[in-house]
Amino acid sequence: MIRTVSLWIRINGKFSQPLYKDDKQTRLKPQDGEYYLRCAGKWYPVGNDPLLALDAKAAKEKLLRAVERGVAESEALPHLNPPTEETRLTVESAINTYMTTGKAAQKDWRKHTRQCYTLALKLFTESCQKTYVDEIDGDDLRVFKVFLRKQKTSIGKYIDPRTVYNHFLNTVSFLNTYKLRDLISQNEWPTYEEKKVVAYDPEVLAHLLQFADVDETDVLEFFLGVNFRNGEGAHVEWPDINLRTKEVKVYSKRERYDWQVKDSEQRNIGINDKLAERLAARHLRHPGNGLVFPNSHGNPDTHLLRIIKNVALRAGLNCGQCVGTHQRKRMSCAEAPVCRKWILHTMRKTWASFQDRIHTDFATIQTELGHSSPATTRKYLAAQDHNSPRRRQQINAAAALLDTLKVE
Ligand SMILES: [Zn+2]
Image 1 (cartoon, rainbow, N blue to C red):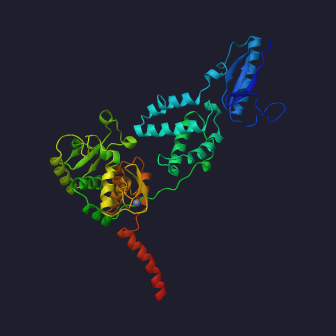
Image 2 (image 1 turned 30 degrees about the vertical axis):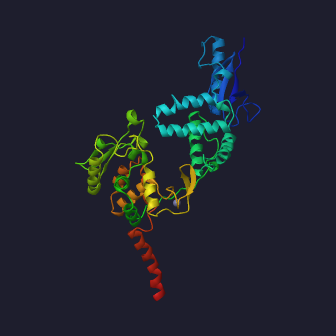
Image 3 (image 1 turned 135 degrees about the horizontal axis):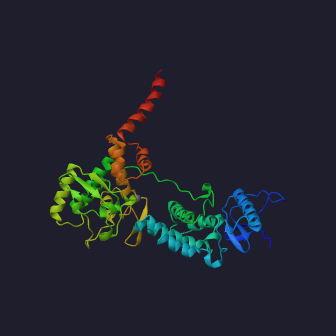
């Protein structure tokens, strides 16, 4: 019996004859798929390179002839059964694996990251109704982009372009894990305007502090003094603060609070003398080894920012132009503690900008902010605020150049 070898290509789960550039079938047209040899009812995967696939076919034919002549025996390539409907991966089970034993487990994602991916992939399956992973193509991402832009928040506003981008990015990184890469080009991705976070003025902060009571001042001075993120402030406990060496340490607290530090970066941050005194006084008022800023139930207060927003309203420091949700009602920041000007991220930015103004070295600022990449820190410091004494001097010096010319 003379056996023949045929070459096949599998694209999006379907087998077909590959396309040749010439009638003699010596050169293949470029196609995106996996090549297979088929011989005597068996399938042999031979990769996705057209040249290597043709080589593999020639080698297999040579081997078959040698077997027929009795100078070689058996198979030289591993074979497998062709993929069937049962072995095709469904989108549903891919997501399931990804979120349980897959990437989420390998990278030990913290709760927040997990929630972000879960939501993004849920939206993707609402937008893309395909059953199998190998059916997904660039058009599904194009449709998804438009679908995301139509999504609304719980208060009926369209979701932020940055959120659209994040959902899209998370979905693409899920698809990448299943070897679906570069489905659409980078310039088709959703875009967003990077928000510029400008540090608070020292004068504005001094004014703000005048309107805070003792406990509120503790919160304000703590965040200004140690650059903590919201979750870090909410989970700090008294034993984390060393009032002798004047430092505070940040680390994940999984068992107690199911909470992890961003980027898994533990760090120690120095506390200024004034803040150390303030914390010592607070510890006398609120003794024990528990949380430094608990909520009324003794749990981590994940809304410490509300405290700051309340003081800002009282101090008359809201912009008066934004609208937010307060006690389930949409209210202007002129009359409710909802002003978007007051966010913890800006507190962190302010900490960094103050450090920069007094010329603290870059590496120290990066380490203490807990940034794993210097690029993030550079971005923090790049937007040097226009009211800094150094920048004011530069602005005026530049203008003075023109004045000199005018006189002459
Ligand atoms: Zn406002």
